[in-house]
Amino acid sequence: MRHMIDPLDFSVEEVDKLLALANDIAADPSNYRDVCRYKKLATLFYEPSTRTRLSFEAAMLNLGGSVLGFSSADSSSASKGETVADTIRVVSCYADICAMRHPKEGAPLRASMYSKIPVINAGDGGHQHPTQTLTDLMTIKRRLGRLNDFTIGLCGDLKFGRTVHSLIKSLSRYTGIRFILISPEELKVPDYVIREVLQPKGLPYEEVSSLEEVMPQLDILYMTRVQKERFFNEEDYIRLKDSYILTEEKMKLAKEKMAVLHPLPRVNEIELSVDDDPRAAYFEQVQNGVYVRMALIMTLLGLAD
Image 1: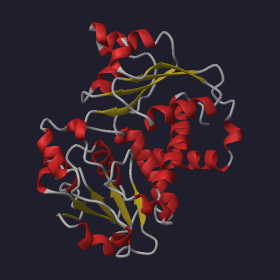
Image 2: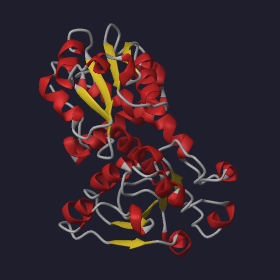
Image 3: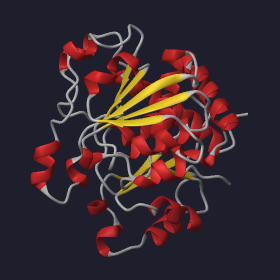
Image 4: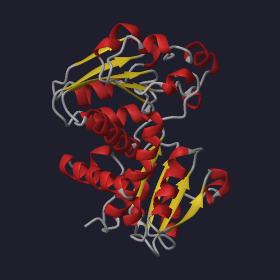
């Protein structure tokens, strides 16, 4: 039995195989509508989510399976003091596979230690978000035709952005990737990402504060929102929330084939007018997320071959 807790839990070869399956699903989803008949997915979401939770549920329903679970800690026995370990022991009796989102870093990992079913980390605090990373990789590959030899700019909240941390870890395994980290001083990538991921592999990176200056260099621009829920001080959030706003004017500085990604939800960091630009790929990401999660569910349940 395998889990998906960290984006590096799958080798590069396994990720490539999973993305190939996701592409096959995208080409004809109807071929997979009965693969998970009689299988159940439990969605254990201890904090709010729209896209990730519904994406998992849509993925399982598209595969012919069913879904059970809860959408907030308040509607679960966690409100009574039940531990993650006990919850997963119970859920293992009801479901065949589980997707868990939790505000505490490491909670899905702990759940996997007590689980009798595969556990998928659907986001743990500001730590990791591996299925979003798989979605990002699929979108990049479909847009660029490759997962190597490109420059990516990651912009906004790089300190608390778990999607950013997971994506950097995953892309560090491919060749020819150059990272440009765009953020205010207060929201820079955590030191451990630099120290444990980028520096040991000698990967080229630079930390800058100006989006406009680096736009012409980028093949991928990964925008993020400043996350109000991660701040202890509302004054700091208000001061930083409008640090970077992508506009039509700024898009004029970019390459013709550059792709703009965003894990969503957005607040105001991408103007609505940018949605009409063919380089905007963030709603395409949403659709790809369903295909990737279908492929992952199949893989973890041993139904992919």
